[in-house]
Image (cartoon, rainbow, N blue to C red; front, side):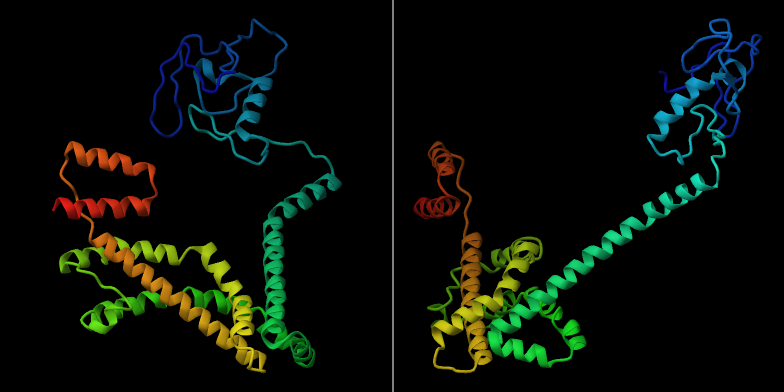
Length: 328
């Protein structure tokens, strides 16, 4: 089946508005632009002039045009179909099927329109009740199972419905603040000249120009921010924080009887240790990146570079730096 009109017996024009074809001497001859059959081929076929085209291409079989319209609509009978030549919209009418069918059509249309909103509401409702459940579990975990149940039973239900979902939201929001980078930048700026601090946090022999490039907004800092703002990492780390804090509190602060105080101390300990390790790791990455060197393109260096491709990234970089130090 042809997808476009074919001009036969006339010249096409493209004036951008209405008529696309000029009449010829045999303009009254009927020729279907879909199947290319003429009136002589099938005397019983129904013909139609559906658009503004003139000449031999103004005619088309009703059945051929119906199939062509079906291909263009792709199951959506409400989609408008235009003539591929003159761009006139086809006038498609449907027979009346009665009030009951019209009611069913209206119901189908309404259902189609409101389904996305219903699905979105169900999704938000599910997330809301999951947040409430997580908040309740967190309260019992931090305060204690029995104390948490008594606290929630004595509280106003409306207050619980409002406050419990804010627990996971607060944890995730707090996790998005990257305080380790702020501390690290402060240490680099003000504490690099303190000899005693270099035993705790190495600063390395970094050239000022190289260090400015490495920590610039277009390089290492963006990489650190992207890593910190990973959605899955933030989500998992934030929601596991109460559990980890409870475990650490029970291990290292058994002498404290108050569950809340013990969990808070465990959480602060975990955050402090984890933050210190992250600061140390980022500083070492900073030193490694800013201390890199580019070797001469020699046969020995090329073999060394290729041999490092089979090892891990960390070992490869360390070996290359050691070899570069020997060469220089």
